[in-house]
Length: 253
Image 1: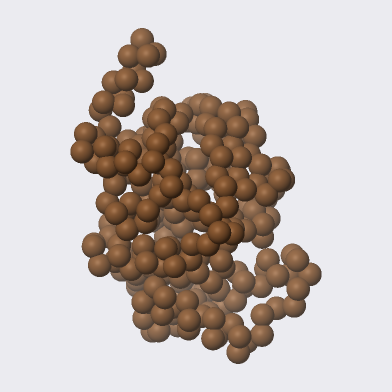
Image 2: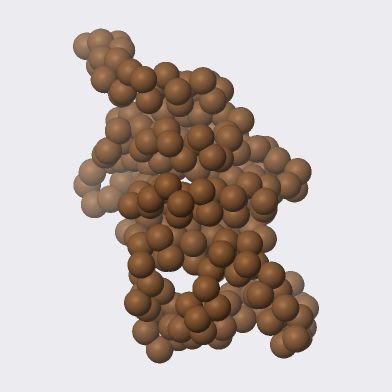
């Protein structure tokens, strides 16, 4: 589904990604962990087409096509979704209108008619219940007046509505209490299928107690320096990141 080969990316004159290679297949959940400043959020930003970052080398293939050639909205039409670490408020744009547009744009790109209103409202109710999102919040402007946990739940609600082929969850667990974390994870787990995949970007292991990854990768200094199974996340929880930093730094010395 997704194949990243020797990806390099910069912001301004600073190179952040320094040769990342990663393959994600359908049905898989990959966790990307690492200390702050290692390039985790840069990777997600590059994948969704954030114009602040410049790709200076390597390739990214998604569903057989060149992802880097596509505009951000085209990547969304292809089935790419990202949940933001800090979801923004959009005053004046209701959740209903926002979600209707988000659903209909990919349909339009595929030559399909807009989703009928009764079907849309039924779908919205069903997915809202999945992430325990209050109906009053669903009638407000996007994220306006939402708590931190409600904003994160709203991100997973959007993911549930759009049913993307590949979802990138960028530090979705930051700032969440245990109850909100459980609800968010429940939504992610119920959306998992053999036809989609998820990349979970996180600093801490606790999210992976609820969302079980197939593979765990450690990002440090803009490169994947270690990969393994779920046991690697538990080792990081127990030992921290310093031992990996020391290993990498010793190799570079």
